Amino acid sequence: MNLKEPKLLKNFFKSYQDERGLLNPIIFERLFEIEDLSDFILKFQLMSFTENANTFRGFHYQRAPFQQAKILIVHKGQILDIVFPAENLTKQNIKSFDLNCGDVLLIPENYAHGFYTKSANTILQYLLNEDFSFENYTGFNGTRYIQKITGKNKVIISEHDIELPLNDKLEGLI
Image (cartoon, rainbow, N blue to C red; front, side, top):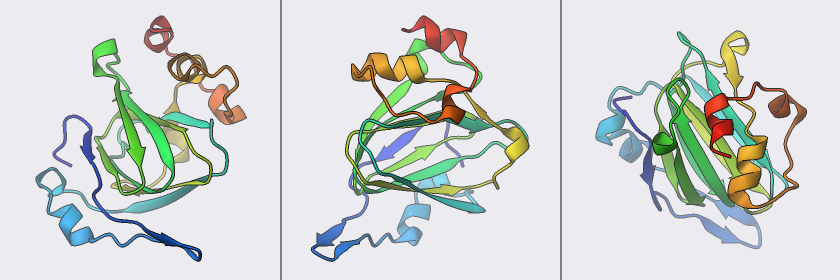
């Protein structure tokens, strides 16, 4: 992916919802025509369902040589998405995005990524240019950072994410 910073594609597709559920048609040819995606090769897909609002997942990334560029597609719900360079975190390069159904976020390799659900029953799809590598999958504990920026003291976070190491620079922003 020829992307140096995250890029938001607001309202990239239209969701059709009725009493039966939802239908989200996405024209991948249109998506991959975007200049920044000209060299993106899809190798792995991941679907994420989060039942409860006020849930945080992240901050995750994969170490070299298994770094993943991500195309994040919001199929249902509302999230606050936060990304930053995993190895060069500064206050200035933390990017936050309010995402809704129909939005697409392009995330470069070597960016730590996390999201906070603002609504229940959130469905996300990830398209990735590298397979999942358990040995190289890591991240940072973002519990206190998310509590601070959302103003919520009780955020649902997995034990796995709580056990991730703290990042001194991220902690310094609290």
